[in-house]
Length: 136
Image (tube, rainbow, N blue to C red; front, side, top):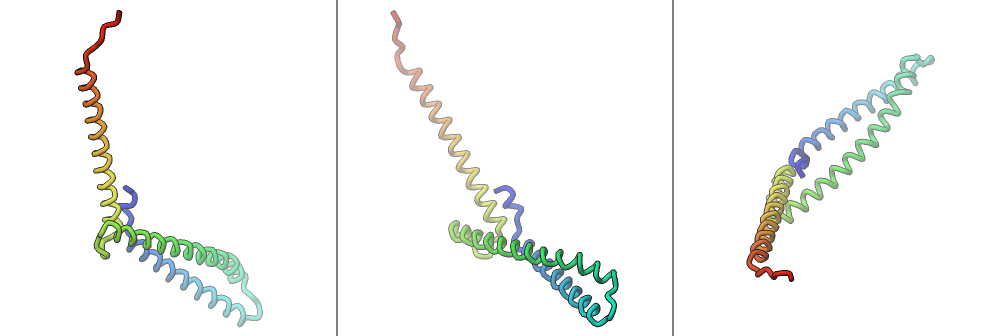
């Protein structure tokens, strides 16, 4: 939960959009380089090397971005469920939800510890009030 309080879905979504924009730029560069190579009779070595390295990178990056986008959509959906469950404002941030959960868990833990202390005190008091029997 503590890590969740540092989570900002808005920043993550912004970063994903920036990554997507960068991947589109890479895709445009690949297409431009390929069309340049297609228009020439002899393929320059540097273009072949560049494309042989950048194309697998771009393909893997597209897959990774899709995975991250799907994950952030699931996280956003779950955070929205938490907002509804805890009757939080729809505009509240994911960090505020996790802060509320952290506070709630702290209150539960504190109450549990207080309950256990009272139970121990009652058992001690009961054991002190019972008459002790003598062993013969």
